[in-house]
Amino acid sequence: MTAVAPSPLGDADLDAGLLIRRFEEELLRLYADGHLAGTTHTCLGQEHIPVALAPLLTGDFVFSNHRGHGHYLAHRADPHGLLAELLGRDGGVCRGHGGSQHLRRDGFLSTGVQGESLPAAVGVGLHLNRTGQDRIVAAYVGDGTWGEGAVYEALNMAALWRVPLLVVVEHNRIAQSTPTTAQLAGTIAGRVAGFGITVSESDSLDLNEVRAGAAPHVARVRATRQPHVLVQHTVRLGPHSKGDDSRDADELRELRRLDWLERYATAYPEQFSAADARARRRVADVSAEVLSRPLVSGGVG
Ligand SMILES: Cc1ncc(C[n+]2csc(CCOP(=O)(O)OP(=O)(O)O)c2C)c(N)n1
Image (cartoon, rainbow, N blue to C red; front, side, top):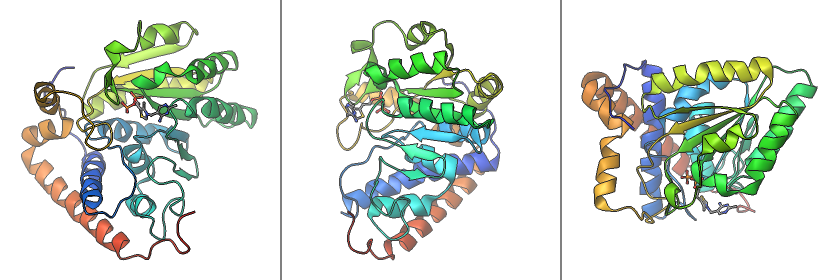
């Protein structure tokens, strides 16, 4: 991955990326203060991917995974509903039943079980075809999830049945504590090609480039009802979930150098600091308001 100077963003994209970053930082604070039960997986460093894709997938069905807060915020712009869900407060997306990894609302579904989304996404794509819709289905998965057999069964059927499925691989080169090089033979692109499915690959960390690179593939999936796999290289800046980062200090320093938001702040300091102030204010307001809500009545369950 190369740390070239970022191209200028519109305020809406910068706001969306910063909302995700500051929201997840607030989650870590709430966790430390005991407001959040269980664990949580942050997408720090990967925020620009769903922000880049969201406008290409308006009205489409989106499947997300265990690292899904950024997907939800980019595609549904609902920080109150997400935070209330995570804190078990009134007004949560699933009334606190889903928590961090299992969100469901109109056209958005996440699952913490690796690989589980793809067979379900194929089913949704089949339904979209059979009901004559031009909507498509997109599914975010990590590179580590290519160790799950269900991924290959789903790709096989997606190709055979001509399902309008876009698989977005957020390739951060690590799965929990296992580097991809230690668990993946060959390449994801090579495996996808085996099914006769088209695949594109990008190592750009520039939001505009990610969007421009994805746009023709999304359009082709929509028009031809054929699947496509988009491999987007990226960096996971945080631990897998909480305090479980197996990478050494040198590697983490190198990854932080690639942080798309830090590099944006350096390149466009004035725009960044105004947007950052907005994001911090918004997240502080959301957090205070949601914390003032009652816990889900009757408990979660
Ligand atoms: C079927 C299954 N096995 C194991 C786990 C535990 N687990 C959660 S996330 C994860 C690693 C996922 O790696 P990757 O797909 O690369 O996504 P990333 O976490 O890097 O975003 C593992 C092993 C799980 N959730 N589901």
